[in-house]
Image 1: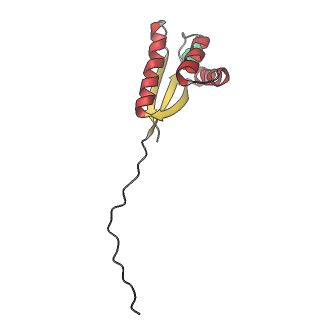
Image 2: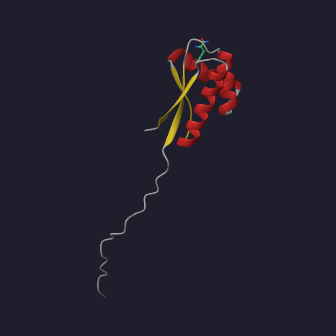
Image 3: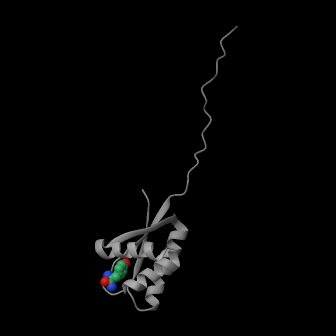
Length: 101
Ligand code: TYC
């Protein structure tokens, strides 16, 4: 019985690339009331009071806090909506986005 010789595979493996996730980052400022930040986090990011308070406090103490990760589109839309909600009230509240490594 002869040995079966297989030729080296040259088939390209299709890469299943999952879309890179983007962080939404809450940035601290000296003017936006704490309760307003908590309210926006609850409304836009569907957090509980407790989760929202922790994220607000972390940003307050450290300058920034990652709120959540989403696909690029969703992250940018949510960051813009949340930032605009502050602007409407005259607050400098800022949400930014950044791709995950
Ligand atoms: N630093 C604000 C204050 O003392 C509260 C605040 C927290 C504002 C987090 C923005 O991302 C922020 N009123």
